[in-house]
Length: 334
Image 1 (cartoon, rainbow, N blue to C red):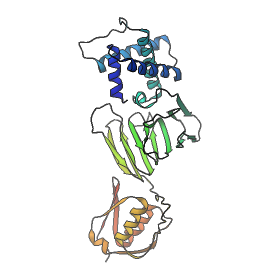
Image 2 (cartoon, rainbow, N blue to C red; image 1 turned 180 degrees about the horizontal axis):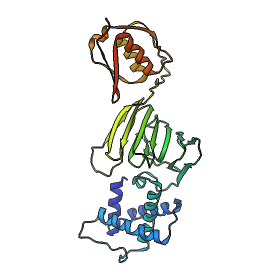
Image 3 (cartoon, rainbow, N blue to C red; image 1 turned 60 degrees about the vertical axis):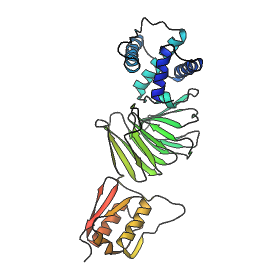
Image 4 (tube, rainbow, N blue to C red; image 1 turned 90 degrees about the horizontal axis):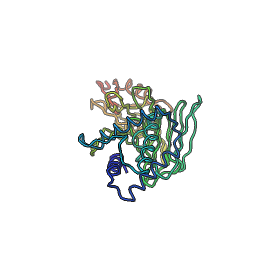
C-alpha cells in the first residue's frame, strides 16, 4: 500500500465506507504504531497536534464543502483508536523526521527498531537479511523487526554506509526526508542531515535508483540511476538532482579479472578503455587526433586523477569533468 492508497483508505474509513477487512487493517496499523512508539505528549501537545491533524485530513481528503469538526464527530471507539494512532504517527514523524512513507513500508505486524549513534565512532548494524549498515556519528536508522514480503525499507537520519545483500524479489529502500534510494544489492553511502542544505548519495558498487520523495501521482519521478564512482547532490531548496563523480574514484573490484594498468606504446583510446573498464567511468575524446597518440607508463596503484594528469601531459592534452563524464581535449602529440 502506498501513501496515496493509504489516504484513500482513511477517507473511506472516516466516511463509513470501509469493509470489515479494511477496518481491521486500520485497527492493526494504529494499535501497532501506539505499541511500538515511544511518543510521550503533554496535554497541550495533544491539542496542538489534534488541530494540525484535522487540518491535514480536511485539506487532503475532503472537498471544501465537506467539513468535519473534530469535537462534533460521531465515531465508534475504533475511530477514537485511529485518531490516537495518527497522533502518535504524526508526532513521531515530526520529532524523528521520518517520511510519510512509513505507513506504506513498515509492516503492520512488525515492531520498529530505532538505533541512534550518539558516540563519536561509527556503529555497525547487521539486519536480518544479512545486509550491513555502518551508521556514522550523530545519525539514526529505523527499520522493522521483520521486513515485509514486498521490500526492505529503512529510514535514515544523518549518514550511513550500506552494504546490501542482493535479493531481486525484495528491493532495499532507504528513505530520508527528501529522497528515496532503491537497490537490489550493492554498496553506497547516504548523507542526509537535517541542518544540511543538500543530500548526497555515493555509489561504490552496483546500480542505485535515487528519486525525490514526493506525493505526486504519476509515472514521472525526479530521479537518476547511479553507477559505481558516481554520486548525486540533491538541493533541498531548488529540488534539483545534480549528478557528478565522487572526489576520489576507485577501481571497481572484479573477482574474475585483475586489470593491469601497465602500458607500452599503447594507443590513447585503448588506454582510456582500460580506465573505463576499471573505474566504470565514461571518457570522451573531443579531438579525435588524440587517438593517434601512444602512451607508455606504469599507472598501477596511482589514483585516477594522477593517472589522467600523466596521460594528458604525455599526449599534450587536458581533461575536465562534466557531470559523470570526463572529457579529454588537446592539440595532440607532435
